[in-house]
Length: 166
Image (cartoon, rainbow, N blue to C red):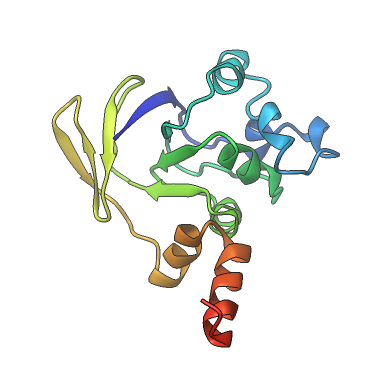
């Protein structure tokens, strides 16, 4: 189970997630500090409260619209977040899959900041409100990439299996 720490409406662009002025910073170890830098309360929450617990950012439709910057996904992965949204912009979703960022497409989600959510393979359960919402699962091949931690670890795993190393 994880707690909703922030809630967005529709059309959150990659420039909101990872402001363009930081585009010279590309290392996944450095990008997380700039996540949502123009939303000071969220940026401070992410950077000051380090935790191993998964936290949830809730969003409406078209999360990650705008440019194709990979840093928008990598900066979020650095904070052990799951993004639950009604839907995602296509390129952001693919970047998220490639980097192993957990994204959940839940078109009917109803939740507020502070709600406890349990994410299962076919639904999201809002434990606080006592409601369930179906999810749109990723295709199995894409889910396998996320489960492996991203495209590079997935490829390494497949190569090792084929070579009989693992």
